[in-house]
Image (cartoon, rainbow, N blue to C red; front, side, top):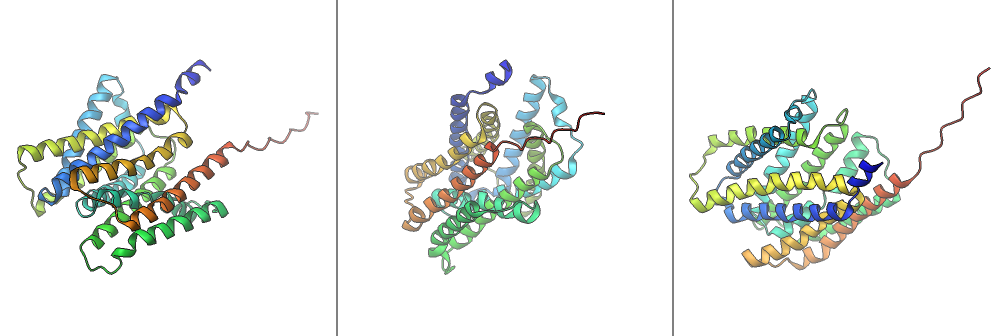
Length: 307
């Protein structure tokens, strides 16, 4: 009872989640500052090296090296492969279109998760979720509308950002399908190992020798990414997901501010109109999940008295 109460610290959970949002925003800012000058695969590889080094040091320092072992390699491989594709798409999209656009499109991930859960997990979708999906779909169409002519290079960036959201949803579905619980450090370690190996293969297409400033940005992107992941994981230990998850949408504010300050990016009218609809759809899905978890389980039938 006392242990459970000590873990219920919602203010701390919210603070940690907001810190993770800032760190992830810093990661995407570093990637965008690097731009096309440094191949995305090279940046991802360094992030993988940093992530594995920090996780190995953390587990060794806390005497938890056993967390780096698993008997669930197939599930980790499926989750990590889809997550790696999502990361590659995200980093690529950041170098193509404004930060706010990438962030707004990334908010479609909960809608992809809902649809995939219906198809692959057999979850039922009722009117609340259909309403959320409809709102999100309208919002996406509004945001994509100016790019549907494919007359500019931004069209590819929009499609790549959508791919990032979709593969992120696929990764979450594989997480749900994992048999038995896995520690967050175990999941993060094998994810990092996978995207590090895959990104190393991009060296055959040519890597560059970064300048000192570029090296700094690459290392910061790696540090921000892995520390943000760890801090986010701990935030869910101190507050329920229904409290923590909606804070993801504060990333939109960070993206608008960083995009304006560093790149003089001002979101278009279509983003201002479409993004709130996508956010509303995501919040409805989160609210519905919360309501379903609040429902008490039906009482077990009383057993017949023994003769």
